[in-house]
Length: 254
Ligand code: OOG
Image (cartoon, rainbow, N blue to C red; front, side, top):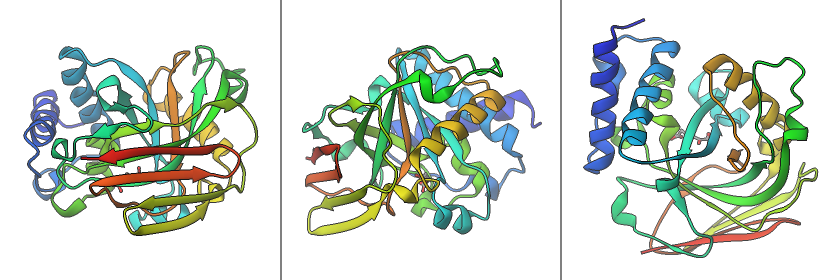
């Protein structure tokens, strides 16, 4: 592991990049660190935010698509944390000035219905989830030009920046549902099958990550299961995501 003061210094660098909306070069350009260090930097970064009064509202998974894993040369998902400062109301406005170079991804969200004990081997993650919804995730890498290594992106809270959750539905299978993202004149279509083959697999991958990375999951928290298409730039105007059978979630960039 790299020294604790280096962990803190790198967390501060990422925090400042976000709060000042100024990108920063890849940490890996100047530092050698492993994936455990990267999660320690992420935890230090989130501690700075909770010290400022932000509350955890959930978690997100990344690299859940084969294309993204192949692009990054990894075979594992990544996990980041969501806070109340990142939550945007369905149909609400989001100030684009908050971000450096935001992109948006269509997703599926699950709601945790009761606290999850990751250390209990008998935990059945599917039975801990009570609702499912269409969602949008806004990603905004703090790194220049979205250029990062696997460790970099984990340290940077997996590029998480904001999220919007649409109408909740009783939990059900959402495998192979058509997904449509419209952002200004850009329309992309895909399927929930892009999320590890079936978004329910994201829940199992998440439980495994929570065990390995000591991340608690509490009743009421949200799980963003991963992107159903490639990310597109978030631009002024309405961006909407429709997931067949779950309806639409939208946000207006201003
Ligand atoms: C990293 C985060 C990607 C996903 O769904 O794979 C992500 C990035 O591309 O900035 O959230």
